[in-house]
Image (tube, rainbow, N blue to C red; front, side, top):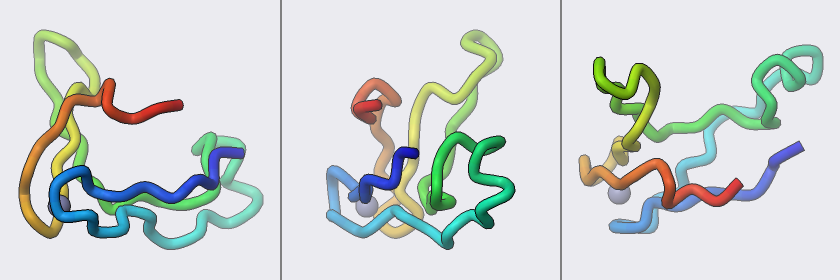
Length: 66
Ligand SMILES: [Zn+2]
């Protein structure tokens, strides 16, 4: 499980949200919800950028190491 903590690259706010219930962790593929906002695009048809809920800055999805 990916339970590593995430921080905003701009304001360093903790982006890790509430813990996901054990029985749902497999479906989500992670152990905690995230506070960051996924920015989608019709072209890409998936999340391609993240936005910080605190400072509103955006960064590319590739920034996230998985
Ligand atoms: Zn931020």
